[in-house]
Image (cartoon, rainbow, N blue to C red):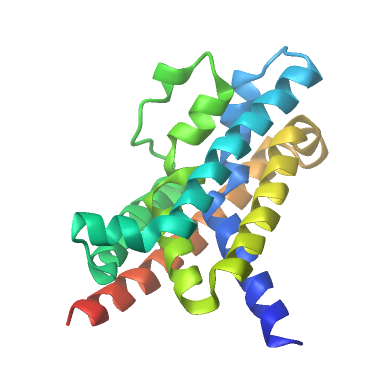
Length: 195
């Protein structure tokens, strides 16, 4: 396989895992319950649009942000890795660390408000991938992962009917383990950079 294609697929898969739309399905379904298909599609677009804007903004201007704030990449890796690890544990163990009720009337606000789509873990991953593979490749990977995430959110009702709520919950927990594993790797690299 061509190295560039391999890097693109790896980057897109890593971002999709961290975005973890499967974990968002139960919340998204609850927030769009008894709403028209057009409303569900619009909420999915809003969620993806906000997440995409933040991811691309960070992809392009990440080093400017670091220089302005005087933050090193290694320290951001450690901080982002810790938050990402907590997110993974939250997914696996099933406890909540945020107040989703504050956004109960807006499904997109819930999806974006959680760290799943645009939190520090996602931003850390974007930063690391862009450092390793370049802005253009990671930009394409972001587009692929966001498209897949939109499909999951848009057709969340169909997915739940096809596989069942229990299977969705199990898959979210498995993805949570992957998120935690990626976080451990990010923390290790950050600590190595600090030392």
